Image (cartoon, rainbow, N blue to C red; front, side, top):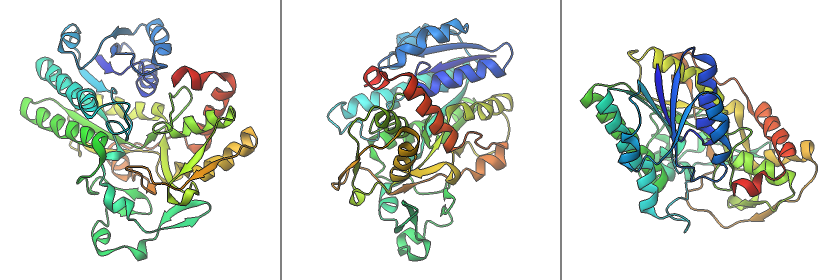
Length: 360
């Protein structure tokens, strides 16, 4: 089998590539990466040393894709993953759409030409912001949790797509979902349309926050890595919005845990299951920033965190995905829970004190 991985030198792409090479005998991987993301260049030669054909190129350029050999499957890990992209002054809206949507269109054309299956790593940020932003919450064990007996009529109508286990795939994806979320949602829709129109398999895996050692974490993306590395280096940290208490909750997932699911999806392309599924760590790997700070304090020593009560665009108090459907469809469950992920990041921070400067 021949697999093309886009964004292969990124955090998720590089870890998944290593896992697939390890678990699929005879697998041939071609990878493409623009190396735009700082830190991604550190994965280039190690991946090539594994026998992976890594090309430096950009999926926004049709010529770069035309130079690639035919593959049986495409795994799309390339994206600008920040929910603030297009509005933070660092990237334009057009740049974001060129990366996340234009690139996907070129890949779908590649799949059409070569009859390749398409695997898309999507995101929890395709879910509608207003019902999540207005979700009634209470602080429990230093973290927000939804108060389900106090839902407004409009939010109540979303149940059972919202429960203590998290959001299901049927939760609203109506705008606003951010420009980033919209780019990924449009990519999902086009992938399904292309697959049905041109008869190739499509699987869309909506991931929660990805986390682990070697992640290029920043304040607006890769928060678990960014926070832990910053804590280890005693860099300034602050809780933003929601009263400045750091009670916002996210779940996290290690990319290597996605590998068994991708293998199953490629080896059983015709299985009759829903093509869009949540793939996350769920409530067992969910944590607030305040809880993360407590963990860091115990593991790495004390450090002060300041507060900024001003809200940040597109932020929400609680985002946890319910992955029940993917377990029922593919027998998949995450294997690396939050404590192991955080310990892995902490060890990486101790071994690489220069990491923040390298990737920022």
